[in-house]
Length: 177
Image (cartoon, rainbow, N blue to C red; front, side, top):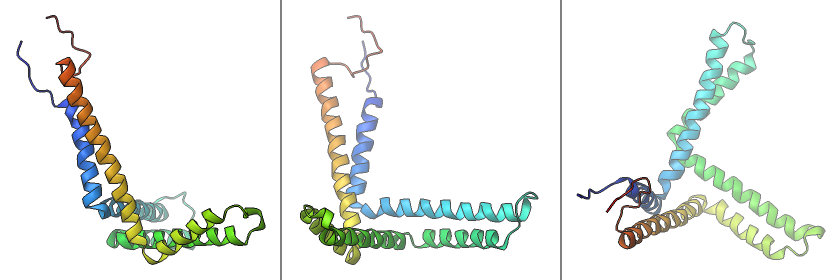
């Protein structure tokens, strides 16, 4: 019986490894893609409000609705134009919130046992305020390493399975040898 190579079991592990490598070597691509997608959704919501305002007869004609649609459209296009600025601002906002949470841990009488957590929150908050892109990219790189290790583990599992069983691992095929 002639054995042919089946690509299907290899597709998921190889794509997982490729995704891990992309996240490791191009960490900004993930956050930029997410910001760009958010910009598209916000712009589409603004466009929908404007279309509803001008063309829907049952739509409530209000100046605030018109302004809301225009503002959503402008914000969406500005995010699509500069997606890194959204990442930077969100990182700084998270940093401010972490810093405030850490300060609350120091001054609150109910959180007296939380000094270690409060210190870590303060340190991470200050780092995020001053270096918002570096920490988010570091987190994406760490996720990329984990995804790459999962993909390599899947490939090793596939190779070991094929080595011991001699078949491609498809249980739906009955082999009568």
